[in-house]
Image 1 (cartoon, rainbow, N blue to C red):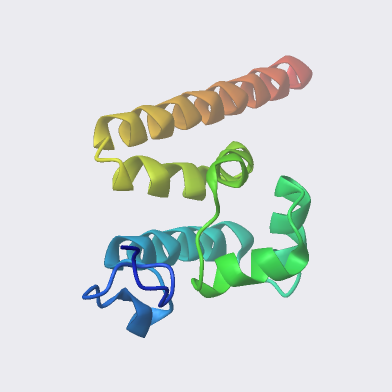
Image 2: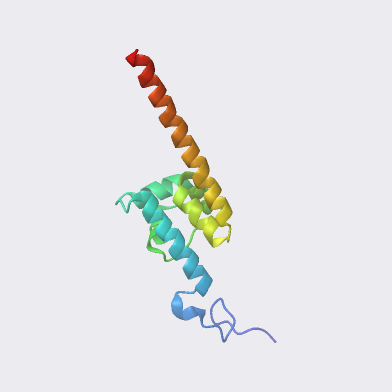
Amino acid sequence: MSFPKKGKFFPGQDWGANGGESPDGRRYAAEIAAALHRALDSTRAGAKTAAGWTGADERTAKNWLSGRYGPSGMHLVALARNSDDVLNAFLAMAGRPDLVASAKLAAAEQAISELLSAVRSLNGKAK
């Protein structure tokens, strides 16, 4: 006895009606697409930028931006490396809001440090 060959899911699952992805997969793809739109300001070159970050094909990046599919493991890592929005979306989906806050705090500390350096250099030139 063998399983019927009707697609890639077991019979009785309703996933084929929504593009072949599970409901969780659609949510993941939509969250990553929203994060990419925030990171890339919905520019026309967004797909090229995302493809450049990951080494993926431009068509693949367009699918990520449209929310049709989500990036796989290594592509997600590359996107998170280059985009704080993607990293924060991933951490939020993983249920780690404490790490989202930590990342934002580290970015704020860096910005304050840079601002303080700029103010000190201005004060040094004014004397």
